[in-house]
Image 1 (cartoon, one colour):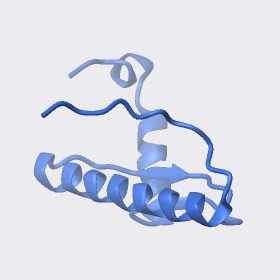
Image 2 (tube, rainbow, N blue to C red):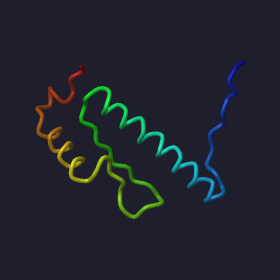
Image 3 (cartoon, rainbow, N blue to C red):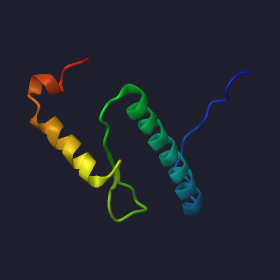
Length: 83
């Protein structure tokens, strides 16, 4: 069985778009949580979306801020290093 090609386009109906967005967001957060758990890495994300006034941070605001500060304090060579 072959897969059908999916044409991506902006949804006209706002409620469908919001539902689709929330469904995809939930999937992305699940994958990020699995990555954090299985690979023992420190993960933080910030998502700006049109449906909230404030950005969404994962796992929470304090952990995300500390993660970004640690990354910012690394030397440039360490930040760009491929592991």
